[in-house]
Image (cartoon, rainbow, N blue to C red; front, side):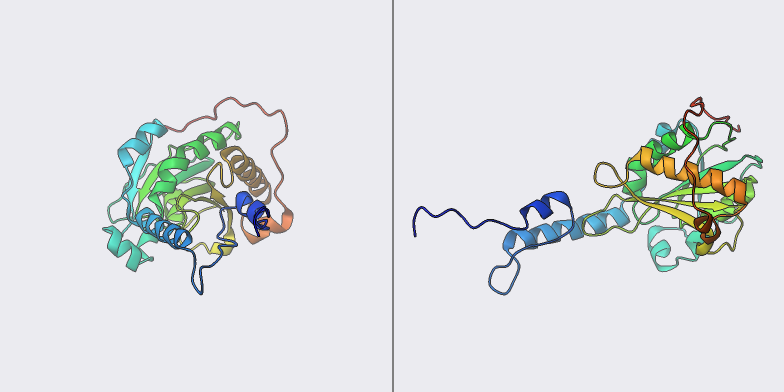
Length: 253
């Protein structure tokens, strides 16, 4: 019948509010062509994010000063096949002993793109929220898994380590950065001894300020408790006191 309004799309508002693949519709017994093509684009972006090389020169330039290491995985193919090698430093790696309060490791993980795009901004926001903390030079780590930060933190002699690392890409997020905090890092720490802030990727995920607020609160609480992970979650993380001095933290050279 002519003159009738088009049927209202009940899921339009939901689709506009999320990047999740919801209410895709159908064409016969399959997805509409546009949705199928969008799926293939997303899948290709996820694969590209895993295999894209980290531009360490550009990252170090953005950081201003940084150390650089790699894991025991010699290349990307071995890294993907042998997660254990990504948790250990390459043989012969030398790092200075700093006795700093905190080290920040920037690892490529499973999405070098995420680290490239969001690592420097997250680190800058975290530094602003930790007045009075001595911070070792940031460490850029290639072919890195989260646990690589334990060995790096132990070698540097720091009280805590935060690993900023590219998370496993999904079909709606190929550039998601995770932050993993471990108090008293040393090889052999379990995942239950860490705290995580995930999906750092403004504007679609956690923004830098929100992630840094959470991490700073966790670090302050971890220092008071002397532990991180499950024990720290039981205590509850407290945000930094309002009005703290925002001057840059002391750098360990």
